[in-house]
Image (cartoon, rainbow, N blue to C red; front, side, top):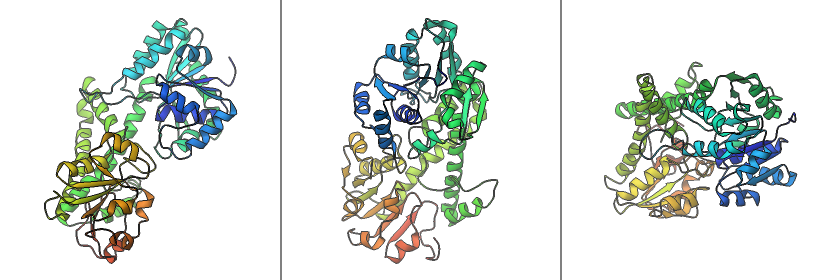
Length: 449
C-alpha cells in the first residue's frame, strides 16, 4: 500500500464535499461517491451545491489538478480507495428524537461487498454511541476481505461558514481506533494536517463517537444558559447584554457563545442533543443528560419570545401588518435553513396573519422551496419597504452595516426587533427607531452599546 493512501469520500453533502475537496487540494487522490447523480454531475462540473465561502474556488483547483473525481459507483470506490470516509447525514427520525441511521447503514452495506483487500473505513458522521461497533461487525460480515477490513471513527467539527479552515487547519483531530495499524493509516490520511502540529487524541470507538455530541451539548448548554438569563432579565428589567459582558471577564466562563438572542438551529445542534438524550435513555442513563431537554426547551422558547416582541410592537396584533424578516439561514455565511430559527419566526408570523417579506443574502432559494407561502425581497431595503416592524433574524454583516436612517426612509413605522443582539441600539434610537431585543429593557440609555 502506498505511503499516501488514496481516499474515497462516501456522501457528497456539506461534510463530504468539503472533506473531498480539501483533501484533494492538500495533495491526496480523492474519489467522491454519492447515489445522487445530480450532486455528482454538479460537483464534476465545478459547481458546489451549497453555499460555503472559499469552497467553489478550491473545487475548481482540485478538479484541475486531476486529483479529484466523483462517481456513483461503489465498485469503483472499492477498487480505488485505501481509506474510505463515510460522510453521510444522520438526520432526526420522523417518528422520534433518535438519529436516522438509514444513510450510514446504506453507505456501509453498499461499499462492503467491494472491499477485497486490507482497507480502513472511517466514519465521520455524527452517530449514537455504539453505532461504530455494530458497523464494524457488519463490515466484517459483508466484505470479501473479512477481518482485513477495519473501522475507525473520526468525528467532524466543522462550523458552517468556516468549513474550509476547519478541515485544513482544525483545532484538534480525534481518532477512534481498535489497532495500531488503523491509527497509522489515519495519520497517513491526515499527514498534511498533522504537519501543522494539530493535536491528536487517539481513543476507542465509543469515546470518539461521544466527542462530537458531547461538544455540541456543551455548546448548546452555554447558548441556552445565557438565553435563560435573558428570560430572567425580561422579568426584572435587567440587561442580558451587559450581564453577558460582565460574565465574559471570568476566565472560567469566557465570552465565546455567551451571546443572547434567538438561539441555535441548523442541521447539527438541535438534532444532536435530542438524539444524545434519546440514546442515553436507551442506555439507562437518561437522567444524566436530562438537562438537555430543558436546554432544547429554552432554545425553542426564544423563537416564541421573538414573535411576542414583534406582536408587542404591532400593539398586540400582527394581522395585516407588514413585517420585514432579515435573514433565513440558521447562521450567517451559510445557506442552511435546517431548523432555522429565522424561518420559524417568519412562518409563525405569517400564520398569525402578518404580511411577511424575507430577505437573506444566500438562503433565498432554499427558503422559497420550503416556505413558498412567504414573500421574498431582493435586498434588505426592499424587504423593509412600507414595513410596520423590521425583525433581524440572522446576523449577516450586511445587516449589521445597515444605515438606520436609510432604512427609516423606506419603512412605514421605525420599529425594529433585534433577534440576534447584532445591532448597536444607540445608533438606531438616535435615528428615531423603537428598538427591542430579547432580554433588554424596552427603554435604554443611549450611552449603552
